[in-house]
Length: 178
Image 1 (spheres, one colour):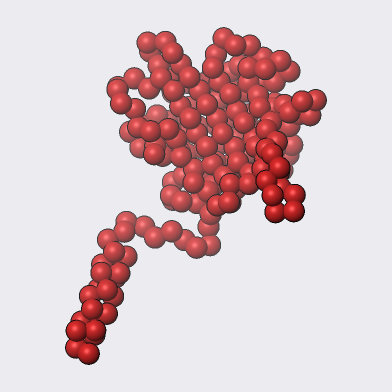
Image 2: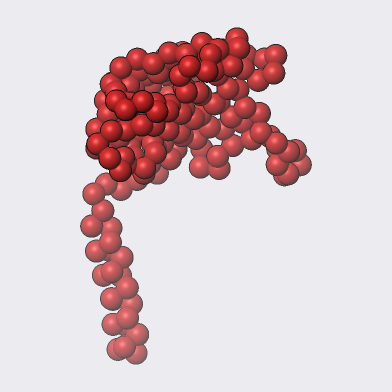
């Protein structure tokens, strides 16, 4: 019996030590993973928060960052999300500046607003509104901070799915690297 009590005590001590060792505990009343991370925008005038699992690509392996990928979901189940990708193949790489593209392939800047479709508990496909480099769309991304922690900025644009469009305004993000 004494061994069983010792085992329970050690397990409890280990659990408490783990809790105390964490910098910040996730607030169960929020859907953000990291206090400084967020991704929000208005889609057709309606505020949307993609604050679950917001992140950017892996930390750069070199001093020059050649691409930035940012993403987040509305909820843990990944049914609705938003993603942004920017690729700068030139030597100078990504900088803290504004990038814009409108239906051309000259700059690799794309945005995707995606919705997982379900019917009767079965996944039936994904509706994706994309914009930036396709005709009739546009996208603007301003990087306001590019540090070892991650990337921050603002965005807006017009995204398309077939003949349907959505307008994205007031976008802002703060995404830590993976």
